[in-house]
Image (cartoon, rainbow, N blue to C red; front, top):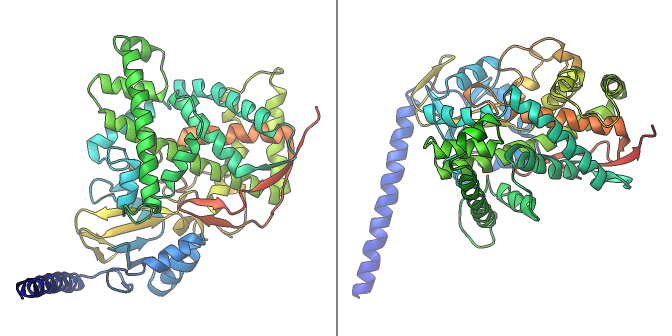
Length: 479
């Protein structure tokens, strides 16, 4: 009898707690309704419109199936409810500028819990204000003029070695998979100075699979596998960082005079007491993901567009033939050579405009925001999208056509956002650019190639990728 009474009391307390939570949420919702919120629909309680969002994401049609219909119905700014949070989605260059330039003032970066746990709470993804600027400065210092000049021959050697070992003697290549292996080794060996060991790429890929999963540690789940892989990576990197510290202790000035790899700069900052070991490890993890997956997709889409636009391919090939004619046999490219690849970079940017490596990103309002006559309440999420400008005829006439000459002239700020914008613009932008330009140079000057699936779909899980891996038929050029 006592047990039954105890059980009944527990149920009553639980029911009361649920009632209080619902009442408080309802009260909060009533208060926000008094504000002039952006128009939109919140969908089901708690779930909101998350399932529709994820369904469109998996099909890589977030803009067409989720955002565009709501723009048509409500306008460029509308509200919804995603992943447990009321969310405002904004579109257009002015909205992008307002949101991204007010980082740390009105909004802060806001990633799902799974992403934070797997990328690291001490990475620049999570850091705010002065701490973000400090860490970003250390990363950016490796990509100054001197750093880039040092990187170019290293990337050239990596690309040549990759083509010699993975492409030579083959008549068919999975371009996306090939470039993932290559860009992964470039970021580790050329930029960080860490030797790539067996199965490292597969371990990092298991982490990536869980960044947007439900953060529930159920054995066998995506997040559980990702968390396990993250611990393996962390253990390996801690050993590398501590060994590097031992090598550099007492030789800091000598290391800095030589410039050094990014890892050397981060460890030097750790020795000086500017950053912690956790910050070094988390930022290496984040950089690897930021630098290789998105770059591989950008390269794949560049080759897709070249295959479908032979005239553009011929113009690009002419640019690279002129660069080759100025080089002695076996002579490496220089940073100045990459600066001559202006048309190639136009082709790459136009490919990224049509197929952005990122859809956009979330921010969280840290104050009530008044914008365009609406109020975005403190605590709400805000999502900006690349497609909001990339596919807008106001900025890009005939936006669905491939036209690299759009980039002959400089574009207005916050229109082309393949690398983000504002204080959080991609820290590895220059590294990605070099990877793309140098890889394109060696492939188009040494191989003829064609797509095996010209109409191959792009899917997303969690980042975009060609559904078949973009297999291409290759034939070595005869010199």
